[in-house]
Image 1: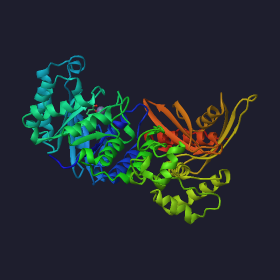
Image 2: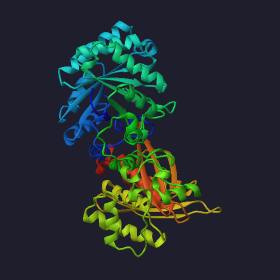
Image 3: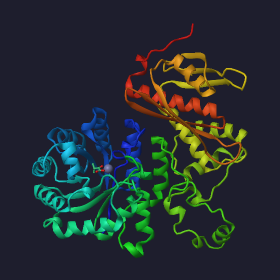
Image 4: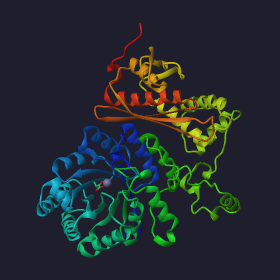
Length: 517
Ligand code: KIV
Ligand code: ZN
């Protein structure tokens, strides 16, 4: 049995199945690069047969990321497996992950096949995938609602056909930890060739038990956990990587087994995924939530000041929290040197031009806000870096609003060829007016499906961070923007979403632009 638990990250595959999440290739590469730094063992980059875009993104990741194995998902049919191989073949270590339902409810109502037919499909498609590469994973989907004896038979057949990892998915988050533990023990006892494969688990969080189930499985002998950053994923999400990893690390006395994850990269990875997916992390989220290392009660604060371990079981530094959880504050008088040093401590590696832009934005912010902490810096740098991928640049926005006036916005954009484009619009509210003014210039036929604003820090002078989702032709594009003025933040977020839409759909030159006389 392996002496460590392999971490199989599926943020870019199952995580992308979260409603409203959709990454472009640049986002996927950025997240994949960060997952490589985090030292995951397997990175499930996508489902290549699902769309040509996904195939291209998985292929790009397979070419670029060399520090971990790259996995593609495939249904149990030749077309999916061919597409999957086309995408992952470039990887230093490729894996094909074949899945097929094993529960009666799925076989009867979805596949319309009987058990023997499904068994034969699983066996023959694993054998087919094996022609491409040695590393094959097989998942009996909805395993926890399947008849166990049937799952055991399926796993045996698939291992005989060449599967080197067999994954037990709790697809609908139905399992209970002690029951799941027993199931894994059952796999070990009843699949006669199980010594030729690694047992993996893939737990969903419908009952909030995904972390507990994954860990119960490790106790029973599973040696791969499938998980996602921040627990993003279909419905209630997947087991959160940071939770399973930190549980094994913190309670090594209990688990006596660990992963190879570089935990100091956890915080950055969490922020990056939250930023690019537009899925904010709830403040009380374990390990990575804003309150995870904050202490409110006087008794706790007193204890922490005397000895951190009185009320903390983990050291925030080990998770990569800036300043180990305690915030450091910059202000108006801070110089470029101190600013740069702080960004480096936060893990940013900006080039001179990016640093110049960020410093300018910092100085502007410092004029409006007395204390600038790490959360402000992160929002500010993320905001500036987003402009790297721009098609149209938001140069200026001005809004008039009030309780006895029709909200009016004037915006000025800079087109890819440097032309200045300006227009104004009325709206039902100020944000609506801003979006309409932008739409009058860039005539993209999209629909705004979500708008949310949250404060980056506390206090009346806090920056507002706006997340916007727009939809076009069934695709969702997420945009974010931050500023002390939430209307400016909204304009930036909307431009960010529209720029992403434009980059994904067509070259900027082809978009219909109405120029002012
Ligand atoms: O939840 C699930 O069953 C899956 C499989 C494809 C492994 O995501
Ligand atoms: Zn899943």
